Each structure stands twice: as structure tokens, then as C-alpha cells.
Length: 222
Length: 390
Image 1 (cartoon, rainbow over the protein chains, first blue to last red):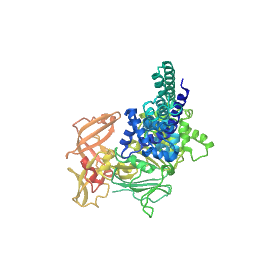
Image 2: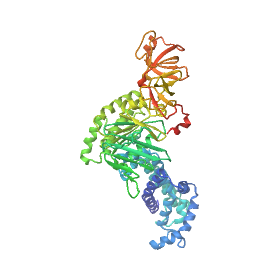
Image 3: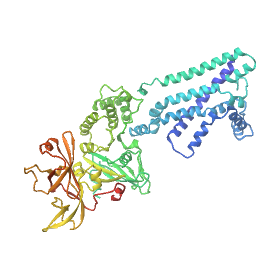
Image 4: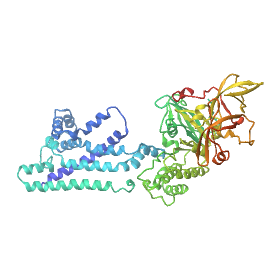
């Protein structure tokens, strides 16, 4: 068992969730409730990582992360470090690759909140923030939960994008999914099997928990 | 147009004006005094709900004004710098019951009501919410979620939530449309009782004319966003301002006549008859054509062979051309010699006793007091042409 790869994977998944969920709530709500020009394009860009081969996304990110590319040079001036083959780099890549998983479930959930519930809340004296906090978020909670689960599980399993921009540096960019690949390359089938079983277990548990919790709401029945 | 344009009187009155040409045409003025129930009626798309939302602050017309309890909630003309005043819904203190009630599905009945009690300190909210729920007769159901309540119970929670805010105006958007008829009657009765305890203006949006007539002190008739007439139900049903108002109120018996001189007296010539009219005919020029309306209650069927009330008043001969029995009431249509149809209802037993049959010749009196003249209006309006009348 490659414990440092497990640690990298878990850290990457947790941080991706942490950073992406607020983005998902904000963007999901905006896409569900606001009408603006270029909304279709926005939605297409967000969905792009779903259909793009991970290597294609990884390739463009690799180019952008270089010290002479705009993004890489901004990063270098801000932090003094590089993005390619670093944990920060794979985190940034993971944030982009997971946009659809974080936004889409939350957007769908917001779309199912009837407009007049918001209006009823305002008419009851609730400010827009109170309305978000006490009415909208409790109602879209299953969407947020499933966004979190999908983002977490998908980050654990991400392979192509991470390999392109991160390589497989021990303790820095080698995630569990990449470690499995390495083990198979090294004909260590037992090691690969143990780690695969672990990934399978973690992913299944995460998703199972989410779908189980979402069905447990008394007020959503019947 | 006979509109109550005066917005003076008591300051606590709710007054509304709204004008715009797009996206939804609006040209409406109405008012509602505290303790009064005003019904906004009109066909779908007539702007009823938009006007209610304008009061609530959920919609802003291009021009207009909303004042209530002496405060300006919305105005496009009051400020010197030309900017509009528009308080957000939170600051308008309105209680609103939405058409589908818009209860918060994740909160119990009690919490739905408690949420509207933000103006009270936290420790007092529970007791107040419980009180409001018992006022709408929902004791014991406080912990239920909306999906565990019947349609009528949901409506009551919505009403309790709206009133809990101690609003300056209560707004009801088709509050009885989503429940069965038995429940509707009961809820209507409860609203009529509850009203006596709440001295604020109540605005009810409905397309149900019977409901409006039964519950409202004032009715405002809307068509394509324009308020055509506001008045008591009695006034509207007996003295509609125009044939369009009469038609929107589902009135029949709208005809056209001509003002004539008969032995020095003005009469209304209708077909071969010269009708006496209670209203002032003398202000109209001889020879002018005028639309008129007669409430069905003012058509008196003569009993066969026996003199009856009003026999000598505007007697008219006609032929029975339609009889529809609807339980205890029989709806009758008579054709008169000029082709016009008189419609009225009589008790089914009276129709039987008179042995009324189709194609039979009968006599009726058209009571002079009931004949209502609508000068400057043509009686027959093609549907696509209706807006020209406004």
C-alpha cells in the first residue's frame, strides 16, 4: 500500500471540495435563477471537462502552467514557485476538471426551488441572505451533498489530467490512481489490487452515504 | 370612464395606480380602505396577479404609485430628482397568500409561521405562532410538514403565515382555487369571519365572480391590464359602466335602443316597444342610440291568466326559445320580435306551475327601475375589437 499516494489523493480530494463547493453554490444559483447573455456558452464551458479527453485538458493546462505562459508567470510572481509537477498545480487542474461535478448538481437543485418560495420568504420579511440561508440552502442541500460526493469521488479517480500536469512525484503529485498504474507497470499485481479495492470502497461509501442521506427527508416524501 | 379616481379620504387606505405599455400593458387605478375587501376580477391575462405583485413589491411597473397606511411604498413621480421610490417587499409589511400557498416544504407548519415573526423577539415567536395556527383552526397539526397537510390545511397555514407578520395589507392570490368545492366554501366562510378581526385592507384576486360577489365589499373589474370600474358588487352587477364590464361580469341582456319622443315624454325604443326607463332619459338627445342593460332579476314573467306584480310596466311579448333546468333553478331565454334574447332565471317549480314550454308565447315586464343606460357605448363588440372600447 502506497500510503503517501493515499495521503496525496485524500488531501487533493478534500481541498478540491473545499474550494469548489462555494463556487458551485454561487455559480449554480446564478445559472439557475439569473438570465444573462452568454449563459449557454458559460454552461457549455463548465460541461466541457465532462466530454474532453483528460489528456487534452491536461495538455492545455500543462502549457498554461509553464513559467513563460500567462497563468504560470502570474503564479510565479505571486508565490515564487511553479505549477507544473507540484501539488498546487494538480490542485488547480483538479479544480478545473471538477467544475461540472461541483456546479451541475447544485444548479439542478436550485432550478427545482420554485421562484415563489423566494418571494414568499421576502414577503415574510426575510432578507435575501436569510432567504438563502434558511430557505434555499436547506432545499438544495441534496444537490450540494451530491456535488460534494461527485467531486470527491471523481478527484480520487482522476488520472489523465493529474498525470499530464503532475507526473508521479512521490508525496507531491502521485495520487492513488497513478500509483495503481505504476504498480501494474511494475508487475506488482497484489499492490495494485489492494489499492484498487481501497479506491472502490471509498468511492462506493461516499456515494452510498450521499444517496442514503438524500432519501431520508420526511418533508420530501409523498 | 366611471372610475373612482379619488384617492383622498382616510390616509390608511391602500391606493394603487400603475401604467405601462409593455411588457404587460397596465392602466389601473384602485383603492381599498382598511377593513374592506377588494376583489380584483377579470379574465386570465387581465393583469390581476401583476397588480397584486405590484402592491407586494415583487413587480415594478414603469409608472405608478402604491401607498398604504400613509406611507409611500412605490412611486415614480414623488421624488424631485425623478428617481423612483420602491421599498423592497421586506419593508412593505404585507401578508401575501400565494396561489399555490408557497409554503416552505422543509419547515413544519409552526416553523412556517414562526419564520414570518422576525419582528418579534425570539422567545415570543413560538407562542405567537401557536396562537396564529389555532386562530386558523390548526391546533395539533403544528409539527406537520406541508406535504402531510391537506389542501385546505395548507391554505390555512399560508393565511396564518401571512397574518402573523401583522401586515398593513393582506393580499390573496386566488387563495381558493386549489381546493375542492366543499373545502372552498368552508374556507370562504372562515375568511369572512376572520376579516372582522383584522382592520386592514384586503385585496383578493379571483376569476370566480360568485366568490367576488359573496366576499367583497368592492370589486374592481380588469381587462387587458386596465381597470374598467370599481364599485360595490350591487353597483357592478346592476349598473355596469359599459357593455364590456357587463360582459366580463358574465351579464346577459345587453341591448341597443333609441331615444325617442312619445307624446312629449322620452322613451327608449327597443324593437317595437317604447320602454319607460327609471334613469334620466331626458339628458340624452332624441334620436341617439344607446346601449342598455337589464339585470335578470328585473324581468318579471307574467302568470298565465292572472295579473302579477309590475304587469303594466313595460310589458313585452316574447317566445320561449331555451329552457335549461339546473336543479332548483331554470334558466330561460326568450326571443323578442327584433331577434334579441332576454335571459333570466326562475325557480323550477314556478316554471312547472306556469307550464312553460318551448316555442310558447309569454309576456314579461321589464322593470323600469332596473333598466340601466350606458350612453357612448355600442352593445355589440367583436372580441378582437374589445380594446377599442377602453
